[in-house]
Length: 157
View 1 (cartoon, rainbow, N blue to C red):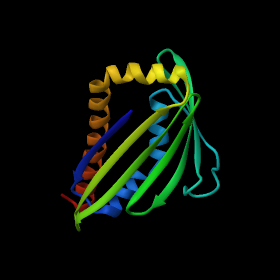
View 2: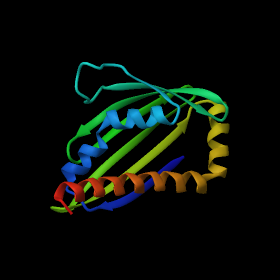
View 3: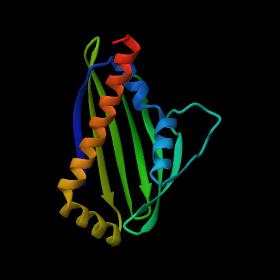
């Protein structure tokens, strides 16, 4: 199952990449939503190989995934490999500078089942694809709006 969206953001690519790679902020957001997040290596700065163990409730059960940062190319792209019991996936964030103060953000999430149980879970998610896509797009839009707001405040406008 693939989810993807694009947003144009009124901020430089470096600013957008800094927000997209603010892993501590994403950890805090996940904790507020009821997930348990543990970073594997706290001493080194985030880079390729950095991993997080995440437990979260989904469909009445606690699920566990490991998210590993595979590709980290500031200010252009980053991607994370997701490994869970029964499924895997990749989340990719690409940035394209449209001008000095405008950036296109493209986010893609692909989830691949590895077991029969995971196939059933993904198949039921496909039945409700519209709702999942809408929530995915809304979260990326909210992220883009937050980055634009911070950039406007930084500029003093």
